[in-house]
Image (cartoon, rainbow, N blue to C red; front, side):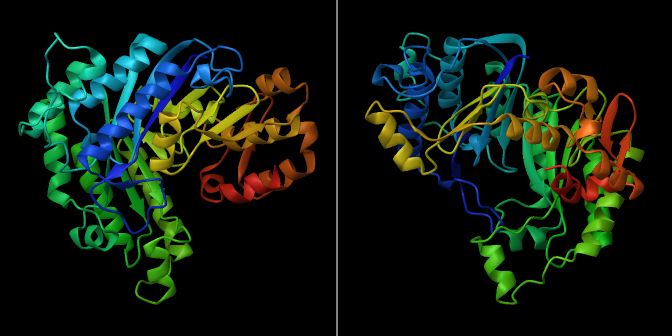
Length: 417
């Protein structure tokens, strides 16, 4: 399988109340220094000596030279960068890897963002200097999105989260519901034919009727892809604190289950395929990049908090703090702070957990070929119990979750851990 590349851009205009990602506030000078560090990490990683470096530092992990067919700018809000900065990052990726002509290249966008300047198109400057030539003139979002398409960005993903302005305000989002519609139309005008929306169900105070309205408004726009999540309240976030202090109602598990069932029924009826626990697409528009995480393909992450996997048993992760990450890169040292060499048992368990996230499930023959074991023999009693409970379907070829099993997936994963 071809590899994917993930690029973490840790900047936001404001901090959402539910977010526990490794992000910080956007400032132009800090962003430029970070992008220089990111490009340095990409450019200097090499299969030299111990490998992933900066290589000349003589430490790190192997990063083979190979073909990639997905590139994903995540964050944070990558659309806060100028197109000049995005261009230099892509150039570094293309120098380091063999990026296929039909690669899926995704950029996460915040509704209402993208109004910052576009890139200088001068060709008489060195790419390493183009960051400093990054623009200072104001430009329209239409120009920004068109320039992204010219750079090869062919998929846009943005966090609508909800079409209810009151809920958006409670979440600390900086956009309005109207911004979602206008941003979507501007992306279409700029030539984007592959767009994803994120929506969250189970928000504090959200009703089932309110969730239905969110789905209806999203489906009226008909993006190619929908990522529909149940709210997960993380400790240490403002939202978790607000719930503890009684400022927001606790999530209602029964209501969340009803919302999930409504989501599957409504979106599938509109012609979308339910291909992963939380993800739906029009035929042919699965997220090729995210599918690598679930199918065990190799992927290489760059930037603070970015994770990587060699497609076999080796995982590693970068420094989480953006400032420390940039500092380490500036000292020509590896940003890796965590390395995991999966045991055979860990690799098997992980392949089950990730494989079952895909609604097509696990190919039993592929599992036997990879691990030399029959999954049905390993978990015979548990599989019988889960099947009787209506959580899985099992035949001679595949093991997969039912729709009920997708809702109660954590129970399935725990049983097969």
